[in-house]
Amino acid sequence: MLSRYLTVKETAELLRLSERTVRNKIFEKIFKKGVHYVRQPGIGVRFKAEALVAWLEGTNDASNEEEKQAAAPLKHAVGAGTIPMARGYKI
Image (spheres, rainbow, N blue to C red):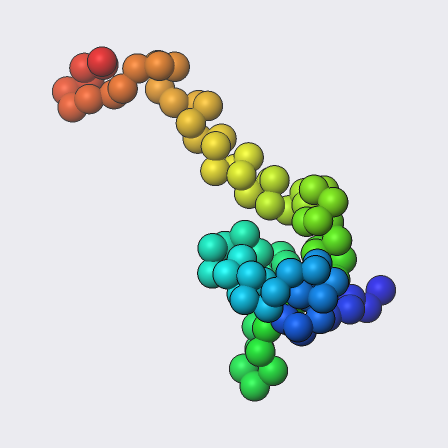
């Protein structure tokens, strides 16, 4: 299935936000490149309509997976609650 790509203006209209707010969400990394939008030289930013709907509905599994992977190393820390130090000491 071919994805529908939207301009910043069309995205702002779809989400009922200002264009500036949409661009701020890009800058703040709320909208992620490759997940929510693509950027091509000479064309500019284009948003994936399906990804925007998923984000709006709170069902964006792609960003949830990234958050889970970032937190995973913390779960498997050495000594579960200890801080490894030089020479093998633990605090």
